[in-house]
Image (tube, rainbow, N blue to C red):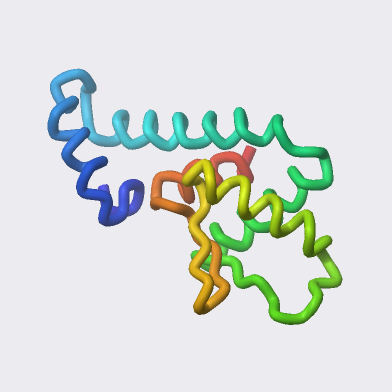
Length: 122
């Protein structure tokens, strides 16, 4: 449960309320990851192609390291304005979380990180 939901008490409580509607915990967690992935896919359609690629690069870094750090120097690999736009867009939708002090970007919750993992693997 921790691997999919992290420390999200509301999501754990939701499972407790809905556990009689699913056959097992794995089925429930896979469904939640699928829903997170679907939400990300749906939101990506509002981005331009190059912005979608930026999101994929940020998502890959988050799934690999647990976070993405915005460089204080101009990032040669990604257009800074578009990168900021993508992070702001997904932060407003509560898919990503940006922590200004460390300039770190993470999934807003563990289930969104699982959704990004599923998206990258496909």
